[in-house]
Image (cartoon, rainbow, N blue to C red; front, side, top):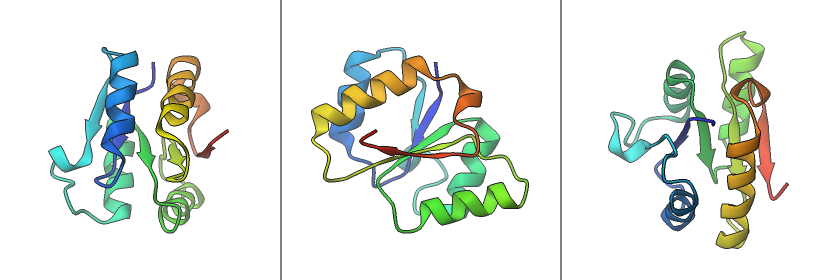
Length: 116
């Protein structure tokens, strides 16, 4: 199963729904770490060090910073960019499938947009 991290603006209702489906989910909320209020590049560097896929709604800056890491040859375990217009129930279901069906290497160097 994938290891995840959320940035500080990720919808807590979606995360709680995902945790109800997967009680053993290995997820770290950014606001519970030294990453609270960290810059996007710092968050991506931390997720790379921890081998965690980042859950975010930030379509404005995260994809650019993620692909900058990829172009620089730096590790980037993946980003799941969840539309903030997506119904929470649908987001939980799609993330559940992704987390349980994808292997960590399948997400590397990719920004995967939800809805799929």
